[in-house]
Image (tube, rainbow, N blue to C red; front, side, top):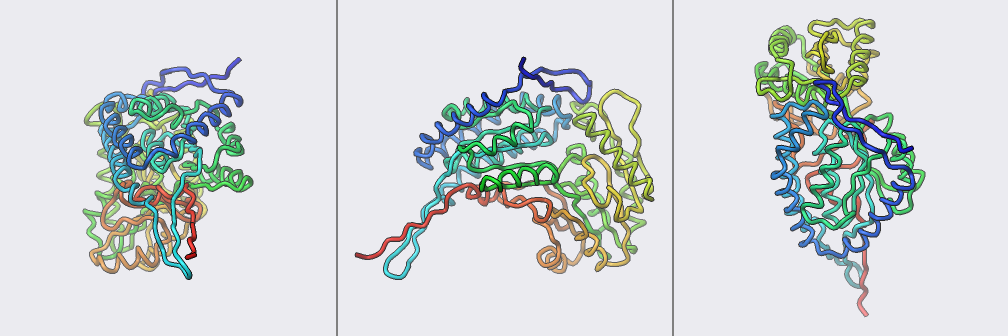
Length: 459
């Protein structure tokens, strides 16, 4: 009997749909089909591929209403934020179509006795293992660049957003891409890891927890296959002595609570110098306690439910452990007695090393306040993490903030006096246990290509 899984609406707690999972034989056959498609797709000109990519941008916009329904119903995303995600994905496609032709163009270099051609060739099937929190964006950002490069893509999406997984494959086909150039596989996570060993899989990209990501990297390394990992973080946003508190609070509230707090590059630890701590805390608490939690379809809702009950319960365990170890709950931090997988906007202070709120990633609407003596200590605490995805600096001295961001902050991305999510024209990725490799900004286009040198000697 074929195993099944269900998608559940986190607001109503009602089952949306039941899906049959593919078995190992069927999943491996899908990889074989992706390889067969690759043999033809790699021969299509970059210009023709770009046309198809632009078609997908149009299809994404044309399907906006259905995509918003899927995001809201399957993982509780606020509808207005879903609109931003849809548009971002369309723009990523447009940017990729425009930039990839240039990024993948042959280069000529002089060598002793002749010249050399450097070319960028696709390598084959790229396996993507993707999370639920940005259910359209996470898949589009890796798949479209690799498909534009001439590879084919097979995705294992998170099981709670299988409706979106199915819709993404439908949109690729609607945009005119040949069959099997892109596929979404309804499979268990353990089977996805096993597929890395398939001889036709040439690379793997994973977004998720550092614990699972390291297992993916281990399997990829065992088979000498390249991987790109984006493993989340506990990003620090530091408020220096000369910061504009109003600007800092507005950006930090947005950075912590956007997407119901379920964002890898969210602001999570707030490190404030003594000079500003009380003023920041008062304004921060006031803004967060005024947030409205409710139906993600309502225009005036600020915070929807968390995506799954187990995720909500895990978050609460981390909060409770932090409190048991000395953190102080100054807002929220209790599971509400109501339908839906809600966790209230919450704030902890007196957060110290050894607590989950300091050491780990709290993937939900919980902010950790950390008071430090001065700017130097703020930077030290910010870097005191096994993670290194993003971060933020608030200071009136832009030159000094820039110097700290470039020379001191040990992360892949830094915001100065603001908060922003992914940008199509900038690289996205981290260091340390936040992973390696980059997406966006033209950098993702060449992550899974063969950079080949062809040397021509004068006769």
